[in-house]
Length: 350
Image 1 (cartoon, rainbow, N blue to C red):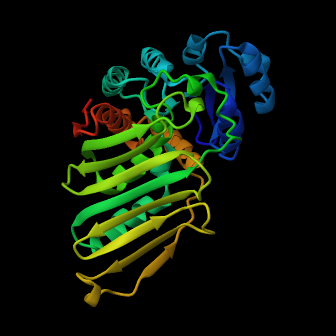
Image 2: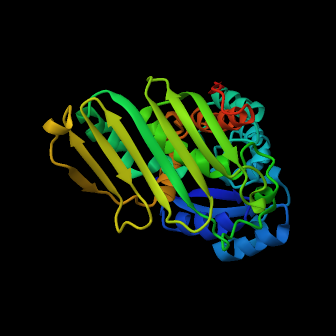
């Protein structure tokens, strides 16, 4: 394939997110082209194809056809997560790179099988957790953390009010989730991708959860304490099922020689990274504030995957199934901990 020829993508699962986000994002990337589509309800795939400018002959009748089509360079799968394993099996069987939506699977057994499949092949396989592409991650990790000494603790908070107009509320797989954690894992893996990219893996979790809204299908708020493999300890709070309150998203990290706060709450005009150094309040430096735009993280993940597919190099992929397994396993541990009155639960490995 010429370097000037765009990679042809088959989109499988042509629902709201595929139509409203993936399609317009891919159209902004010259190296990519949506060329085929599949949906279990064929009329929905045909409507998507019309918006994408795809000929109806490239609307498949079966999921298998997307992976068998030699004209397709990779598959973009936006399926209910209980079907992710089936899609990855088809990808490996047909030697077709695949990017698929988070969380990685409906349960840890499925997730472990996906990790094993990914490790058995040289195919690029990406789990679409776009928060791993936030520009703030490299700034905090590479530029700021070295200035604040040993990381001792952290506070991660992502909370907000219930949104009656959330367009995903009527989606059956969200109202009646087959995947562990429901909304907590669906959105929580994004938060955990950010946290672990900066501070490393989580060793154990003590958590309490509750279901506030019937529409959530299962527990939808989480308050927890983490112990990291680095021995740092901290709190992780997540949920958007509360009554009227400002939406707050912030990540504070405390070190032996300073601290850093990343705040990307919607009320801010521009997200900020604020840090100060010094071993005590009497010997503290002035605060340094860095304004940092988050950028288009979904475009960045597609560019990342396109580079991996073009180079046939799975090591380029930013969020491998093994990484995504860890993010999901943290939520599973939190759910288990809550069922046991907040007792400490070790996060499983693949």
